[in-house]
Image (cartoon, rainbow, N blue to C red; front, side, top):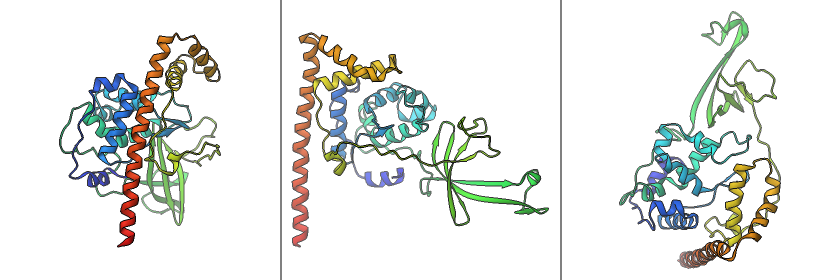
Length: 320
């Protein structure tokens, strides 16, 4: 959905009161998630955990990094999304990480930032329209002209001295650090490709091209995943995690930054660390797990109440 569409759906809405301070949600991972889910519930907006590179995106880390640099609009103005993406150590194949992070932050954290970081009250702030221009469909137009080698010096017309030229009009589908993902219409055919910046020569395994437009095709991977209630209904609350799960996530994040090439050994290393914890240290994580369990029970109760209301409303409509 474009920013214009969001603005229309947000007209007349007011920001809900913050449940905690910015410093508190930065320090407490569980409190952050609890406050974020309740924020979207109060706003009536859909919320789900984004996935990048097959893994859940840690919105807490993203929020801490962006607000630490002055907030969303400042990061956009100073073009620091690449710095933010470096914190996550994405796979080299995730070429559009900066663009995707900006998009997800805008969708799930921009208004949350206004309340918790900037302490906004009252009517919603108008979000900057960073993904589309006024009156556009959300994509930027692209014009390409190519001539044969003999006519490249001057090609004002489709045919010059018997040498052929062509013009094509397309759309920019996405942006990443090295260029753009584009769709180009040639006659009745629509081609998709990657348009690299002049100083970037594209993937090393490709032969040298005279043009910057390189064909691409999405690779589809068939990954068997456990079925989840949340796939059928994104508003279904995220299941709670145990104290060990929180310990595992914390240690895994640290180990990945220290030993990026030993990820297969992390499970064993973390398991050994857990067994060596003393009762008091382990109790810290168990309390976090208990708090998350209470959060899940509360959200599940709210979800069931909403479901009953929706079902009764649908039944009344059917009767009329």
